[in-house]
Picture (cartoon, rainbow, N blue to C red):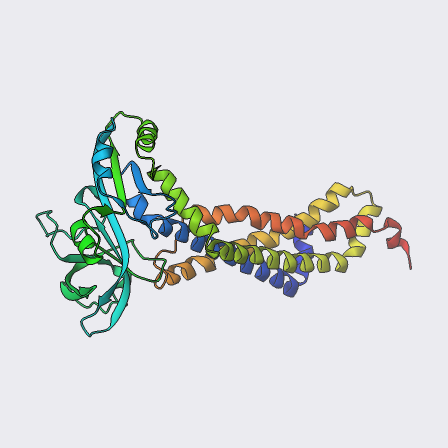
Length: 371
């Protein structure tokens, strides 16, 4: 350990460059990982927030944001299946919101029945629990975009009167269009949805009844729709946004580039350190040092740089992610993410040592005795 530290500390500039490269690589990996995790959570946020066990969707629907209409009578048909305790509905569509100053903003309107779930935002009358008619909620992250300075505030949705009753939190949209929440009845009216149609039917299963058994019975009874467990539909939505839109690939590519940049910088620095001390390695071999001993020295050199760079990278990333959350409300950096990134950082340091190890092991011990 002392010899490895002496080698890298001898040239402080090279040590600084290696640490800086690892810091940048760790920063990119953690930051891009935070964006990716936040993106995945936001992609299925509405689905995960509901209290339903099962979702009935139109055939081929891949995510919540792109629904197709289904017949409302499916709710009655679903009740005929043993194990179905309760049904509710959700509708959604992009609509124009006209601000008080006359400017327009495209928003994603989401209307849900009161039974959708306790965590689902609903414009309720304070202290009474009843839903306020012709009222909506917006997420606090979109208040500035919608120029909301006080509540309640009058707006228009699809040329119909609405009142922004207040705001909710944790529902920042990743689509660029703010989420607006209302009751199912008002939502269907704002988007001009026919009373005979709906978009999503949510099922609560009776306590003690296997969810998968009810899902299979519903799918057999309702052949023209898809029936998903909430977890499966959430997973399907995340998979769609991460694989079909290119967003996931771009984020993962940025993290991979961070790894490769760090690998190149550390490899160059450790190789330069090895070449500068090549006579010392020849001396070690001449006095009987084993290949394993030399390999440990070089790997330790890389790991020492890696540990310092990793610590600095995490320290730099945390405030940057916090600052980014002000404009990207759904970005998320859980406590376990930096710990997961530690393994790629160690791997990067070990791989960076390969070229140096080959050079050090190929040196002839007799070189130290040459004039």
